[in-house]
Length: 413
Ligand SMILES: *Cc1c(COP(=O)(O)O)cnc(C)c1O
Image 1 (cartoon, rainbow, N blue to C red):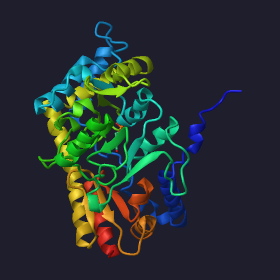
Image 2: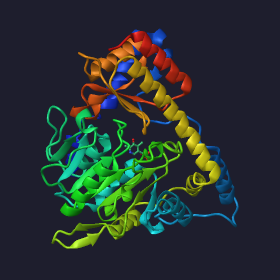
Image 3: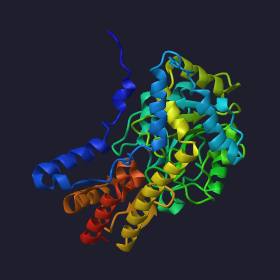
Image 4: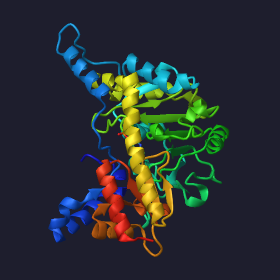
C-alpha cells in the first residue's frame, strides 16, 4: 500500500481564511440584505488593473508566438536572459549591489519559491520564524518534516518563534539560542513594519557568525517610501554570503493573477554538507529548477520585463501611490479614532491594536456585524498577533473612503 507524507496530517486545517469565510457566510445568511454592502479588507490581493506596459508586451509576445518564424517553445529553466538582466541591472547593480544576471532565478511566485527552497536545505535545521508570520513559511516546514505536532495554540514543536511586538517595533531580537535558517519578511506582511539598516545588519552579522541562512522575503519592497529603509538584504555588507532574497511582481505590478517572481541566490552563499564541508547553494538551486521547473510563460516574462521600461516604472508608481494613498486614509482614520496604529507608511498593511477589552476575533466580529467590513484578526498570524487586527490597503479608493466612514460611525476606542 502506498504511504502518504504523514507530515501533511500535522497541518492545522488552514485555520485563518476558512474561519473568516465561515463567519462571513453566517453573517450573510442571517443578513441577506447586507451581503452586497460587505467590503473586504482582509485578503492581501491587489485590486487595480494591470499596467498598460505589461499588457502591451504580452500582446506583442503572443503575436510572436503566432508566427512560425518567431515562435518559441521551452525557454531556459532559470528564466530568459532579457528578464534576468533587467532585474539584476535595475533592482540591484544600478543600486550598488553586485548581483549577476545568473544569480537571478525567475519563477511563478514567491509563495512557491519560499516553499520550494526547502528542497535544497537538509533535515535537522533549526528554523526560526517571526510571530506573527506569513503562514506559508510555517506550513512548508511542517510539510517537509521539520517540525513536530502543533500545540493547542497552533505553535509547532521544533520551530523557534520570534515574537514581534510593538516593544521591538515588530522586528525580532537576535535569539539567545542558535538557529540555522531564519525567515525574515520586510516590509512585513501582516504588520506593515520595516526593518532598519541597523536591525538587518545585526541579523546578517548573526547569520555570518553562525553560518546560518536568512530567507529574506522582499515581496513588498516597492512600497518603501523612506529612503533610509533598505529595499534589499544585499544592501547589508556580507549578506551575499548568508542570504537568499525572494521578490515578486505580484504586489508592485499587480501580477497576482499573471504570476511572475524571482529568487536571488548569490554564488557566495554556502551551506554545510552532512559531513560538515561548505557547499554553494547556487548550483543546487539551479539543479532543482532545471529538474522540477520549466520557467514562466514567454508572454509573462515579456510583461515582467516591460515593467522595467520608463512607462512601466511610471505605471507601477501610480499603482503604489494609489494603494499607499489608501493606507494613509485608513491610518489617519484609525488614529483619529484613538487607536494605536502601526505599518501603513512603507507597506500596504495597517496593523492596529484592538480597542481595550476586545480581542482579535472580537474585533473581526464587531467590524463585520456593525460595519459590514471584513478585516483580518491578528491572532490568525500567530499568538503574538493577538490583540491586533490587519487592514489591507489593496482596494478601490471609494471602498477605502467608505470603510473610513463606517469606522468613524462605529465610534471605536
Ligand atoms: C503576496 C506575498 C508574496 C508574493 O507571492 P507570489 O506567490 O509571488 O504571488 C510573497 N510573500 C508575502 C509575504 C506575500 O504577502
